[in-house]
Image 1 (cartoon, helix red, strand yellow):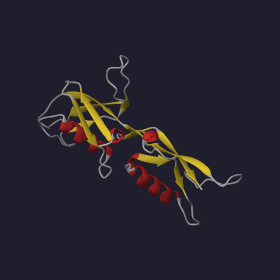
Image 2 (image 1 turned 135 degrees about the vertical axis):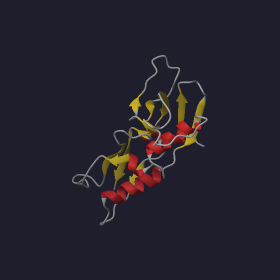
Image 3 (image 1 turned 90 degrees about the vertical axis):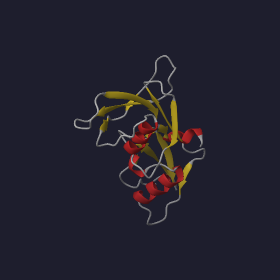
Image 4 (image 1 turned 30 degrees about the vertical axis):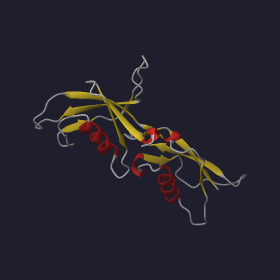
Length: 167
């Protein structure tokens, strides 16, 4: 597993570090649930716990390099009680490719097709990212345009953005 592909979790209980591949076929919250379950003796479901929206985490002491924090809370009627805070590393889109992302446009290329090509090239979850434009940009003074693929607000899997050159 490449380091830049690892989705890393630290529970506050000091249970060690859990690393796993982000599964682009699952939702972001399902990936976080899988991390939580890997860190616990008991496997939880989303019917038993709620997972908060991801929040930026910065350890002022520099000891914990994670960039995100969530809180898992036992749901009423689940037979469990309490909350647990987890810190994990969302993957930075800017580091997903060593090469520039360039998409050659044809006459019938749509933004949906552009996004699909970029998602495939970067091997990221489509539902967790978005393009920075809602219409195909005009190529007035150049034969290319640069747009961005960005992590959705509230993405459990990704942060940041990466440039995409359209030609």
